[in-house]
Image (cartoon, rainbow, N blue to C red):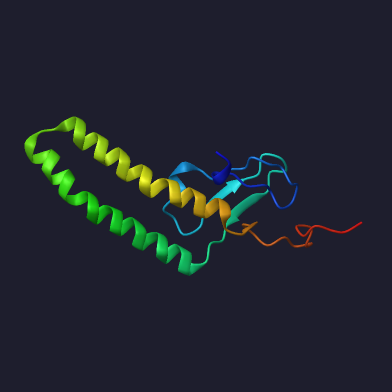
Length: 118
């Protein structure tokens, strides 16, 4: 999906993606498939706070249906609600990381990370 991918700022290799388990983290790390440099997303603190509030709101909405499905023994509905909950929280987290500024995880000593004009 194009919303969750980005290009490497160093080698311009397209189709880079952060690991799926890093959707809820403040900053995600991955290595570029083209040049091998370690990249990290650098979302603003306000965007991360908004994401946390969004996930809390979605979880609050899902509490009563989860309790209903659990107490009545509707296991299919419980699984469906939990799957929908995880997708609604995971997808915006991955999009947030892919659309935030992508920077190098460690500072480059010779500053070769910046693109040079010929």
